[in-house]
Image 1 (cartoon, rainbow, N blue to C red):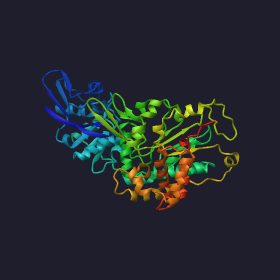
Image 2: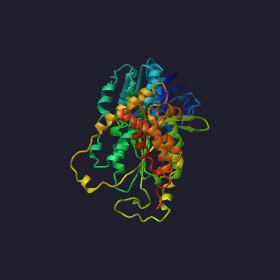
Image 3: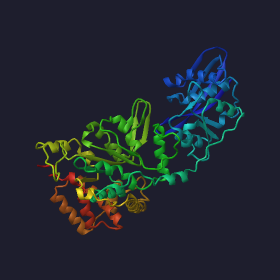
Image 4: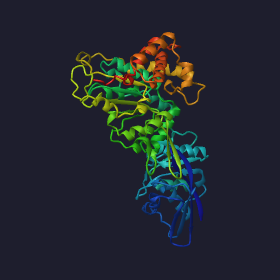
Length: 513
């Protein structure tokens, strides 16, 4: 008997329906077609063990399985459950009247237990789009999939539950989640807070400006000055995720298999800090079986690159296009996959190989030219995409020993949110632009032209510090953000002054000895 069961294949961060056709007829052979990979082909042995371990007899007949569309490669063990159900239904052991109402995915253990799968959220979204009544997924994935409304999502632990449910012997309770309540309850909880940071007021201000305008930032300072400490606290002052951003971010983590068991919707902006030994594929995504990289896992959040010059030059260069376009396109001969990559880049580095150039107390022992060679590990085009460049010095003992709490993240966050609301109104009619860091030259000429005094100050700074031409647009973008934090409609001279101070590495004499 020919039956059809429905599953899904994940491509990029979206899913497409896979129709599994099974026909049992006279004979004893097993055929599987439709471009399955090795893990899908191996499902036969897992299904036989799982079915017979739970008291059902695997059909000793000729079984032909077709996975449509046949030109899309089917990967992974998540097809075990729909394959098993299709085989048993074709043999008459499962009623067929409900099969067209449900999409199902799950990996089978030899004892029939159903193990978690990747991509449950995009699969649930596709099931709703295609009009399925419900989705059957492993218990470990049910909260993740139940984020999708207007779809009955059932979490199961064993194949017997699925068989008895489809035969009408038992009723399963769909999992219901109040997505909005859970989301808004969790999106303001942070373990790290800027109130723990002693001193470094100028650097905290730079982080506030960066968060308010979505600007990339790099910190240059000696070891132990607090670069990593402050970078890890940046998510606590960023505006909270919107539900749409949270859904998109959760889809990426779901596809990558990074969702914690029992979790639903990600409610806080991601913070990713890969080690400097990371490969270019691991950073931007791809591979034989393409997966999102760190830059996509940090989408709508922060990508922190500590000790930036220690990263491979090739790894850093592949980031240039994603930082500009806010997306990654992975092209292969037969397909092309796109992953979102809208990140805020935070980088840190020592000023020289020994780490003590410009240190107030310790002497730098680097040879002449070593500082420039060290900085030369980072290309000009990459630095061109970093709006704010800040030098950081060690905190004096008086500040470290001060037991009074500093300004909390919540207070800084309120100012950041107010500035972002101004920008949201400003760019409401400009698709794809959400903050000042994304402004084009045309938008700069419309919204960030300084007053006469500010223009004169900018001209003086360009000439005095020998700033490069690429610094001009960056200064105006940052100055526009500073003006937004001040609630000023125009970019004034004090805003230009502060923005110029955030371009340390663009000065031609920086690092000269």
